[in-house]
Image (cartoon, rainbow, N blue to C red):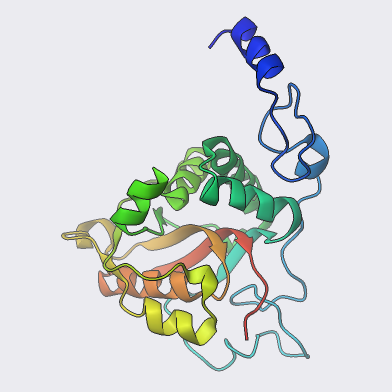
Length: 240
């Protein structure tokens, strides 16, 4: 698309910031400069394992303390509120590919702030059920992972599949999520040669309780992965 045509489209169809709805003008991306510069940081104080909110002197939240997990740790680029939540809404419910690409670039840039996420051998996107992907037109986690892969040079593996559908997880509490998502993810056929002995960093858009990452990590370990961790664009607050 030529510069002249872009200029005409901006005049006829002005774009609005995904969060504050101000006219974006010639701004690059779905957020205005002010909103892009005010993405809320991840939760503090945070659990050292799942990055969820914790209370008291323990470095772990109540859900992680004293337990072993397939997903060794979870981190996020931002907290799921303000401009970050608006960006998620834009690509998850309004079909905005520019929004998901912008979120992926933010994840790639923020990855350097988490040295504990270095040293992984490959990336894997959290899969969605084929029906959900057809409805939306894409898997947002895969688009996010592509941006992270481009920035890091890590290979993006097509390692997992959504074995069965479930209600949208944002409607569920912690216990309900565990019940609904148990066994919902599985390794793709013959994926062992891709993941065996390797450390895999899972990519998703939002982490609320860590259940999705845990189920995906368990599936990867069952296929022979040596290690698995999760990295989300946004971390939601703790659930009761």
